[in-house]
Length: 261
Image (cartoon, rainbow, N blue to C red):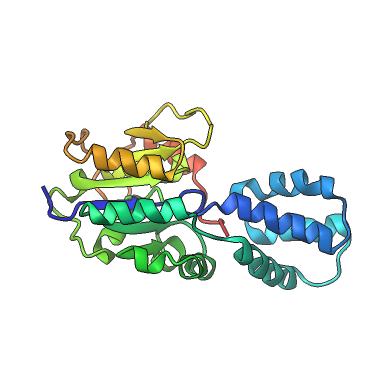
C-alpha cells in the first residue's frame, strides 16, 4: 500500500455548499432591485445547479427585468455577491483534518473557470488544507476525462503510475463528472447524494453518503478494503479515441464543460 493514499474532492456542492451560496446571492439581488421575492425559484431553476453558463443566466435575468448595464457588469456583481456567501462548513474542515491525521494526501478536482474556482479555494481557506488542486479551464481537461485525475495526483505529489489508482478515492456530488470520471480512471468513489436517488445505469459509485463528513468517514474505514476492478486507465479520452465503452457515452452526454461558478 502507498504510504500516503490519495483522497480527491470535487469543489462545488462537495467541499463547498455552492447552491446555498447561489440562493443567498439571488435573494440579495431580488431585494436590491425591489423584485418579487417569489422569483427565487425562477433563479434557482435557471441556474441549473451551476451547470448553465453564467452569461446565459445573467442575460436571461437582464431580459426578464429590463435591467440596464451589460452582462459583463452583472457578472462582476454576481462574482462579488456569491463569493461573499461562499464558506467551507466547520464540519467539512474537521473531516479534512481527520483525513490528514490518518495519513491521506488530499486534493481538489474541479470543473469550472480558473478565476472563480481559485477564488473560492483561497477565500474559504481550503488552500492550506489540501496538497494540490486542478481546475478544468487551466488544465484544458474536464471531468470525467481520466487525465484530469492524473494531473491532480501529480500536483499532490503522487506519480500516477503503478497501482496509484487502487489507493485513490474520489468524492463528489455530480455523477456524470465525479463518479463516471472515477470509474474511467479506476478509482473508488463516494457519491454525495444530497437526498437524490441514483439514476445512472452504466456505472455506480463504490459508496454513497449524505454529506462530506460521512463520506470521509467511510473512506477512512474502507482504507484496507480490496479495490474494485480497475477501470479504463487514465489516458485523456477527450484527446484520444478508444474502443467504445457505455459509461463513456453516458458521461459525455451528461457531464458539463465546467460552467459552475
